[in-house]
Image (cartoon, rainbow, N blue to C red; front, top):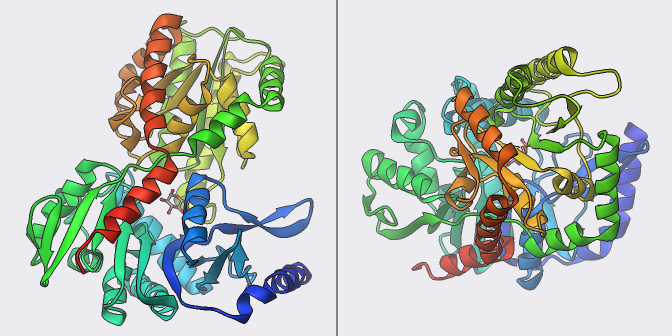
Length: 484
Ligand code: G6P
């Protein structure tokens, strides 16, 4: 492991020596808890790979055009030196100690804020020492940005792990424009009020010039909360605070539509889709779920609904098959470990009950699949199940829709995903209502080609209109237009 770390460090250093020689101040700094690269081990060899997802491509292209820098945590404390550049943009790592990993990352970020902001699906835990670590790490990020941003430059801060950075940075660098985007939901007042440090979090966010959310509901939850618990006055979209004007709004994130359509039309990926279908036993209909293995995603509830449908005869083993991909996530967290065990038990019960030798009713993968393989699965899926209890946006829903270039395929979508505000052609469900979920799946399974086509056409038209590049551009334009 040590040797591996050294090799990785050496190759990264050699590759990036040229870029670290001079480091001019950046006109645009993106700050996120994670860097756009992650350390992965393939065939026993450790290497830095781009983090998956459209967000990285979108922000990378923006940064490339604007002398940009990305500041973030390399995601591991073992490899002290991460690459200094990626696709022509400079990277700067902020290190987090093992103790901070416990208290800042697993603790305050993922056991206090994450459940609280997701409707308290799990009870949030409040600890003062977690809060202390959160403020310390946020300050480290703020100082790191303050050192790197050019005079009058712009800073775009991302997500719930860094909500104090806007105010901290403003104190250090009042000359820069500060934008903040929350990728997850912002909770209703009654829930946010539970947070012992609610005023501090609000003050932290109000340090920004522009505060963006996925949907208008979240933006208005925030503005109402700010008016109630801070000195801010104004409307849901414009707040006056400490002599400054702050813009608040919804900027729904999207996917890289062109890239997905290209992959979906790729003959190799289409052949792979056929192969997968064959491996599944050429069933009449395939249901698919793809989620990060997280208790907010409602995966167990979905498995229960499908299982009951096999029991009541609305689905037939052999004729109907489900595939569930659960992407490993936050595996050092006890809640996530428990969720995995319960889910795997539910999967095995369902197969035990309704499967046959060589043909299980649900195929379960606990893996990080390459994106091309996911696209092949989206092509196989006649019915896509996206049923989170609460989700900021849910890009899987948009990826699926973009893959269905032949206008087939049906989407069952939770009302509590941000994507529901745009994908009105989906079969909507309340994921807490098991009978309702079953009914929506039944409707989706039995929908005729004409209905499916009409619904998919609506959803694709809407998604195509604004891809992830438009999302980044519109946020940065709005930031540029804020008063200084
Ligand atoms: C969500 C959050 C991101 C986070 C990602 C993966 O999408 O909004 O901020 O990076 O989950 O979680 P992790 O804890 O592995 O960074």
